[in-house]
Length: 477
Image (tube, rainbow, N blue to C red; front, top):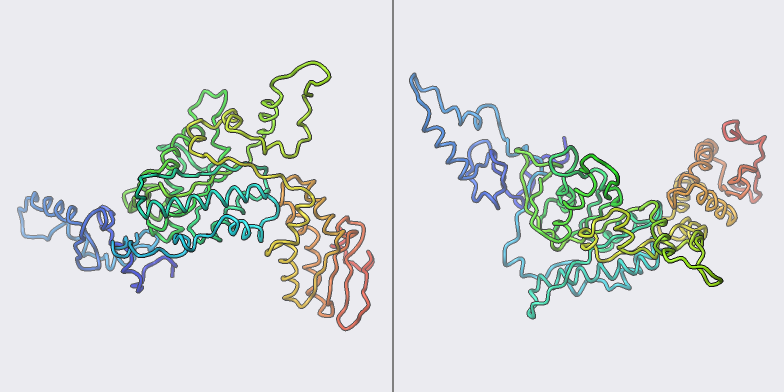
């Protein structure tokens, strides 16, 4: 049985009734009229049905009411079969709104920036500046949300602090946002800008990003209006240069996102990616939704270097053209001028006041990523072998070799798992064959394909070092 089918659960009273004909929820269509077979109809649709029935010219024996047959003939409990993902939760009563909110929306429980950063440090290595910026921006954003809820007496309104992060692939942009949402316990929607197109073209409309957030909030509009939306690959909607065709997935998408970033009432489909007659619509206010945009922005370094070396001079104190060629922190010098040159329109950048860059992964950072975080990759493999009652150990030089191989792939932290999967495949395959194996130690020579792992048997303190003769043929390949 599908998971989202409603089977008269106890929590159905928290959801609104939806008109069977026009698909409008009770909050927009008014009080519903309940007829047999658990079908709800709004008063407008019921009146239109009666009006159409009055225009029927009956010339023969009474054959029934044709417009009422759809509600009685073989339908059977249609309202019960409406997917729960297409049902809206009822809004809280005014008395419930006045009660103190729970969790992060309580000013007493809102974590301070240093506490947020401390939680991020447990999972994310490096990126100190980015974590500090995000902690402060999120803290100020939810203080703004609470200030709006408390109706500030002096009339001062705090503006939104939407963020735009840049950084090479594999530097932790998406993982940073996921961890942040988990710490704050707020709904999070992660969407990809590459699938967005202008309204009327094949693809997702810009309102679909809010629809995903509403689904993440269990169709609770009030909860979704305090959530976080992360739009990844934002650099893919930059303006196209030297093109004669209509740019339906570039500048047009940026213009469509303006109203969402600024804050407005948006009608979004519930439980679907596009609007149609059979899907109910919900009105979501994006004023208190925090938008975080991220992208790799390839070749942005060239634009920054061009700006920094624009004024060239001649003489002993002149700046060289290749001064910034080996600058690893060149992205840290990014400005809105560089992003506008890349292809982002000024109106879009103006609604993202917090702009910062993440550092590229270094060898030392990759070594720490392998061992330090709570869910480090090496800890995951140790747990996998521990289920087979085998201890997995890594030599320090072996960990350093893994980081060096990952640097060569130039895909950031994502390369770590690719490297580990390569040499752990044969170990994960061969170890369960022998119940006498008690410990496996990964050596530097094994990582560099010039040796083998060190294996210790149970009940013996001596370690057995495998040679090429001991390994099966598939390991040697």
